Length: 198
Image (cartoon, rainbow, N blue to C red; front, side):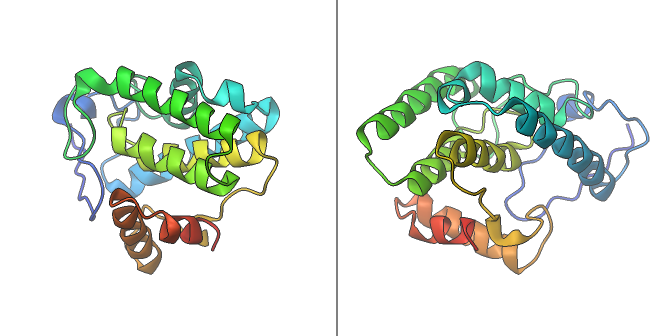
């Protein structure tokens, strides 16, 4: 296969076996891949707007997988399926289901007991799901879109802006986003919450 991917800081490499799941044989660069994936993500966003899922529907394994499939299913055969390999980030592949169920239950608890404010609940959920890294690729974009679903449909608040930039490209916005993620990794969510609303 002629798919040549040059990764930037913070991107998870796709294994050779996973590259075989590419549905569009003419894609040969990361820029082309990003373009096709973005078109697919826009379709997923339209699906969300039509469906308007409530928080109790969003916080299910079925929705987590369905959203990923809607975001990447036109591009990747494995879209919506948990990864079968270990990555440079995330839990062991055999722990994905358990860790995701723990997160979904934790998030329901945070909502029910108002443990955090609504923005922080959605951001903590996004951060934890990306740290689990359930899918071979697209975890960051998936985590941001599912946080948008939760904040808009679950809490009736505006979507996050996520720095109003394309975070798949090198630049100041991506650098600030990665810095905010590192702070969240250490338990401080303030910078990530602030970034999500810029």
